[in-house]
Length: 262
Length: 301
Image (cartoon, rainbow over all chains, first blue to last red):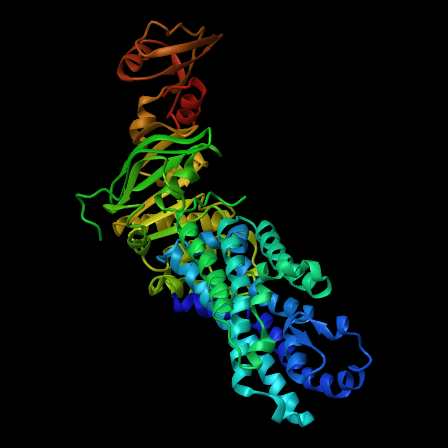
């Protein structure tokens, strides 16, 4: 890893990361607030198809936590880091021409890829931790602290970082193979949406449940983690989903020809 | 400083293909340490491809290249520690100040910008300008910043692609003086350009490249001296035909004036002219531009 480039990436994305961190903090804070003030009064009136979403449910507080972790808003928010910082870091720099200046320094391309991966991973850990802090703060304010399994919530945090890390890793591979932001973003966003679609479709349509294991979201079972049930298979799937694209990026990027930018 | 027995830059049968397009064909070059080497050719001739091969941005289809005795593919990190590069379009992050951009690049490289202040002075880039955001820079100021980033770490070899593009004449003048200073310090400068007058002014030797193939590599003075010079003589009375004099070609007589092309030893021509009633005589030194156009026009390889 190149420490100076790591700092450069952080400094360059500070506003974006700060905004997403604040968003996650507020979103996390709203979890117990929504649970207490809105959902608790509606849950009996809601049909099961609405009360259950992904592996979350509106019927229990841990279920609400799970649901909020899988909510499209959070997915979009965290993707701002996982995708929108990863892609410009290689393909975007290539498109703008700044990569040419960077690669004129004595820095290995594989080091560059690894530094981007570590920077994005640290940013993901931060923004998702803000979600956890928000949940804890909101629970404290709403008097629900006794219902929050703190240790398991921290495992959820790390597990969610694996999930979004997998999308970040895929985005990195797309970025490493592309000369422009557009194609890399299309691949990464398409992959994310396809995964989300398979997971959500199975929630509403029983016949599509068979497709859910093909979604990375399906391997983030926050409800089970909060209940203390950890799946080695899920961990392995997410681990591989990070390692394989990352290894691909580390292999391909140093071997790519980089002709003059358009 | 590299040993004088090792060329600063050497390429052997260096070739690059993009599919069916031959961007560079069997390039053999040797650039000595301490010289300013011009690399001349029009856009698309293969100049940037050569530079990108030297810097390891692209891989050769065949052949090899070395800088300071180090292989450009296997040892390019070591090379980059000792080389400064100014791309034809030096692009910086827009939202940082010029100073921050320079610091970032030096930081990533892990090198000390020991010559930054001096280079800034040469290209007239003051502190106030460096403290402004890059997005507020003009094209010329961005170019100056590019020159500074290429030289701030005091590299042994400098590769410059169209370095004066966008610089105003005053800064260009100062830039040429800086190159001369670097040459005196023993630095090697690989100077790619399509501005012929600039190459003629600053370079010791020049390589001319056309459609990916090397046309010629020579000292500029030798190259120019070998080429035909333009001669115009005016006489008291009708002009004579000079075509019988060795080396004289393309003779055109118009009343009292004769124009011709001339190559080789000038003495037979002068000896003949002193016997005539010459009123005025002009022998123009051939310019590199003439050589360039001649080589390109005639397809001489």
